[in-house]
Image 1 (tube, rainbow, N blue to C red):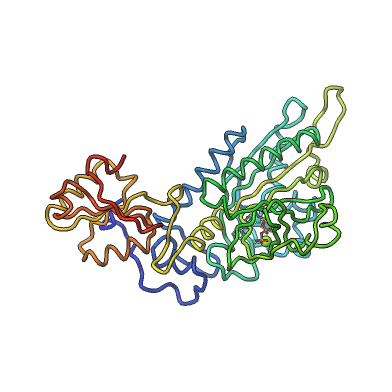
Image 2 (image 1 turned 60 degrees about the horizontal axis):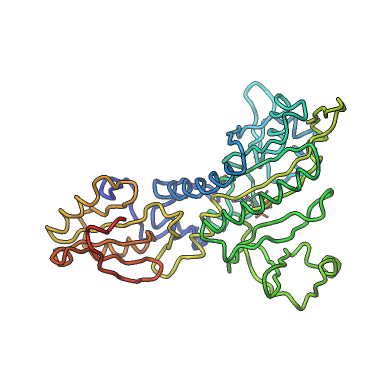
Length: 407
Ligand code: ATP
Ligand code: MG
């Protein structure tokens, strides 16, 4: 991508009501554009980060045999009425809209109900199960506060996976596989060391659900972890009764702020029963399908990564999610020509700063944008047949032979 050809420009200041660091930096660097509180556009660079996060999640879920779909945002109230979740008293974050010909539709805050309703057309026998279906989809939630940049949107992107089983053992086994996949996903996203699987309240059927909590000073949640971080609890379940079950004591735990980047749940019959998702077993008996659900806040993950790794000069992307690996600058007449040559055929790896601007301005933007490696070719480096490569994360500078530059 050539910066000279992009409509996006870096900005000196963020929208005046933007207070969260991730929102400020992502706006200034031209990754997102704020429409209203909690509602953001994703610009070319921001979209590439989102697509990279999705790519990692997709690879890990497909490896578990999950199937990807894309369901609608507009919701028929009927299935939601059957589970009691269309009522504003029950779920207080609905956006609802009137239909011209009469009646109300909702904008999906999550997708358990329509997913089950859809599968009723395809599941009838034990031979149809298990099933693992997921999507990346925009969710709408009328959140009371939306002051955390893209970490809490009123419109946001979620990956939601739903699993369906004939037995509790099969649900348990898949849940364990999903836990392992989540660990791999957060590792690959660069959040492995700071993201903990956390015990959370589990509703009526399962004792606990699990949240994935990333340590973050400005996180909205509070977690408690023990010395080797093998036991982590959220605030809801951090009490003497629960701790006693694990043979632990309050004094053994450290309190920390964190952001919830994912959440997994054994729903069992919670929604499949009221919606009547049933199958016949091998002796022709009709039974209710077991269900699990597994969410990741894709846009929140982007905000958390931005927030967590940024320094006083700007964003710092882990390589796996960075929109481009290299930020290329040519200086001097020979340098500019060489940069053009290097860029050719690598449009997908290189963000080429070919703007008519001073090197100082380009270097400052390279830092603000947080691309992992800044590559500079100048008349001086070319005299040695080399380019200067600076790591954004560590500041380490190397002179690299032009022939081995992008290997
Ligand atoms: P929170 O407690 O932060 O409101 P939640 O428990 O309501 O989260 P879920 O319904 O489990 O969240 O949604 C799955 C995931 O979607 C969450 O783990 C989180 O990462 C993300 N998420 C939830 N609400 C938002 C939001 N308003 N903006 C961005 N991401 C969100
Ligand atoms: Mg919520």
